[in-house]
Length: 621
Image (cartoon, rainbow, N blue to C red; front, side):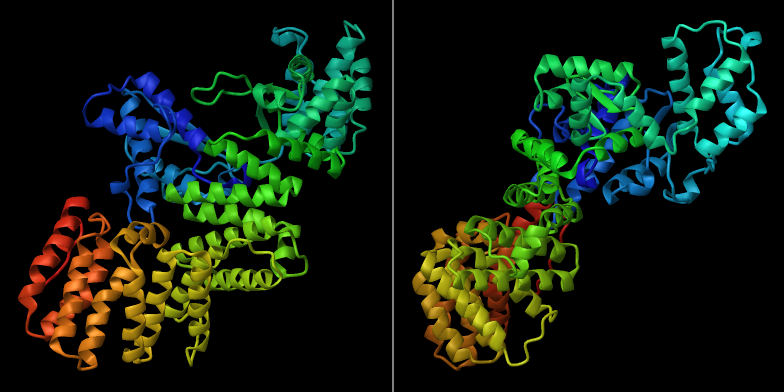
């Protein structure tokens, strides 16, 4: 797909839907249910949707693994005892998800075969594949190609092998490239037929073919065919090349009048520049593709860059649908058109969709594609101011990119991206180009995580304190109680780490005054867990460490237990984080038995209920 991102949904959809159609899987039973889930995910069984939340692990990766497993299982079930063949071109360009899918197919049993092309040896599971090295044509193969191309009729006796001198000339022109040689011979044949010359002698045939061998490279030959088109067909061909190596009639209609476009497409087909392509599963519109990637590239690069950008800009405005594939195309063309704001906003949408599918690395590439634009780099680096809307979009995309980097374990890159986003935010805020102060909240939270991981070193804690102070200030300015509670909780933890328990406890009093259980869903929505609620159990520990009276400690314990009743049960991680410091304190006080009931009710039982007993928690009563 555009930008090489994402699991190959359309390709897998085509494979699976064809397999189901041929194999006739019934809709009942476990196999039918699994197939239905897969087809829903691919958008073939109704409204496209992600896999069930309970089948995802914390970073969403299970959805991708399940998708691969379902696709392979469905393929094997549907073959109905017969062999199946999957063709995968340019395997050296495969993304990780596609490689995972093909490797899973190769690693299984049964007659499912994969035919791959690759420029790199060993691109896929060497133990499960047999490699056949492809080489350029020699003069012998070219002689055979000439015979096949210029056979007057189907009878073998009419096939005449050309003179050695012509074969050598053809070889020297095309360098053994079969596509180049084929195009030369096709053009010579078209020229012969257009002149209505019949009953050629070997001499006249050689003379015409030698004229065709004057092209310096295959692009010149392709463009000679392009130049022979009508003016309207040339214009449409250029627009099609901007859409991509593959395109649909509906996409061409976004750029041109329908009747003009249809007429031009058929002229391109007649000129052997474009050919019909297989339709995507469930698609009704006609699909087309350029006959060769060199054909596509020659026509695409024949345009001035400003003309290409104009087409890209028009397409980025035309792809307005809410679906994933539409947004992916919009992002692709917006980046090429250098439409910064459109590219940034679309990358945020596409990245979010990919993350929800468990495709975090692909999401990172989506953000990077927009952030890598020259204009965006100047804005992010401070050499160009940028309008408020664009600056805020840059900050959002940088923040989301940093999250994906943290998720895949690239902590250094994540910390760097978060800090770059924070510097841009502070610089732009001072210049009055920030209208939404809440943009700083996820950035600061990300930097705080990097401090916790010690990816960023802050020996005296001054950097952390300045971050927390900014967080609280912006929360007050935005009027967000949820973010205020989060900021106050972060400040409490800062004081805890420096063993300033009295300041931590007084800060918790401010938090308790601002906090209400009704805030919890909003806090969890922003951060995945309720950091404000988690602070209550810690506050009870601080009161104990400061030697406060039993009544104050018990009051904080009771508050923690009452807060726990308002937490979402399926968010087990959050409940454990709230209860753990409380359990430790009760055990220290010799009251461990009191912790057993809340630990079971809000911890171990929800864990078993929502995660099928796959998690384990140890508690000593």
